[in-house]
Image (cartoon, rainbow, N blue to C red):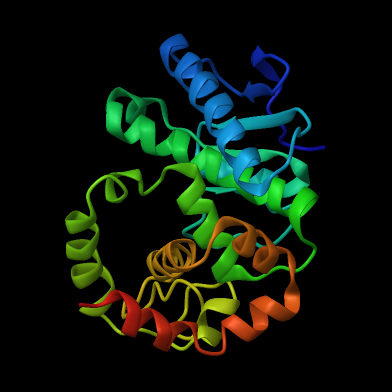
Length: 239
């Protein structure tokens, strides 16, 4: 496979990390610890006992990432990571690792792709974009700063969701960067990732866990819920 990084930085029972350059050992160790911890959290959430070893490919430039990923699919200009080929592939710029919080968000973004892998291989064959992206953010810790303080979450909802356009659910069913697609990078009238996180959090806070798992695994239940999910979310969350 072309453009695949071949410098092995770490291997254990859970992961193997490859890159095309060396990265600080402190970052690799931090990635290992958080990845293993979050993997257990994800598996427990989905009620799965084990998962296979995962290969992580770190790319030191957007160009090398796109060259590799384009072998699988067309890559959007805003993409920094994916799970093509059953691997986690992510852009990792050394200079950005100097910022502790940026490095932490990068690790959470790598775990985001792990959620997709586990979901696709162990949970469901039905791909519901808004549900998968919402779960990936919720379970990866990408928005953990909103989960310890409910008032902070309500303030975030007001600023990032309700002060913008709330699109129909059909807009959140197709990846893309145009208005009417998931991200709307062209006009920035809404953010599909933010809305998907809020919708999934609304579901998790509205149902018991066994019902949530049944919903996630059942295509008909997902399709039934999404008929009214936007209106139910607005009525049930916005105070």
